[in-house]
Image (tube, rainbow, N blue to C red; front, side):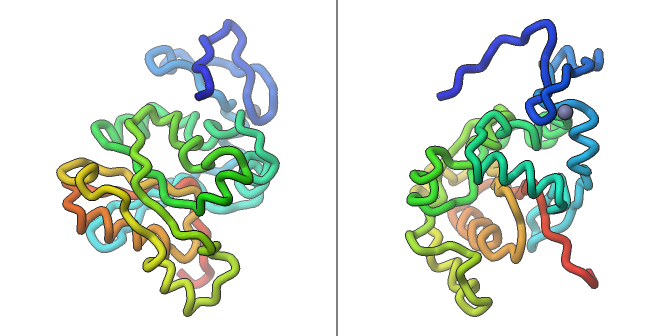
Length: 212
Ligand SMILES: [Zn+2]
């Protein structure tokens, strides 16, 4: 468990290492780990849509700045970057998802072992919600290696480890990148079927398809 460091007098941005000018309204919520310039560079879009009846929100487009920061975080393993994606609009996110339990979208166990951490879990910690790691993905289900036909089978590789833990709860499913949405949709179906009181989806970035 990473220790929650106490806030120092001069906070530095975890992305660009420049000192952060603290806006006064942040006093209530603590200090962001990312500066305003970096937040703007990541290009927040706040895309909202529905998957069935589920309210979905993507904070960013999957653009170059997001891609390279995500690569540094999950590819190179710079865990300090875990919080930067959600840090700036944290007060709004905490208000939106107050009372929810966070369920991270699954990634295969071997990828987590190779990396030393689960990137979605690390990314979600900053939201301050209880975390329930209930979604499990079978080995060998790496999405980029699959054909379109095989991707529809992705749903079959995803399981809920405990339906009891989900029943009656307000669940926020969190994923890092929403591309085809097959993984997220499979998770949402399972969560609803398990009797979650309410389900919402938050993704860090969404791929924008042309013509949509
Ligand atoms: Zn910065």
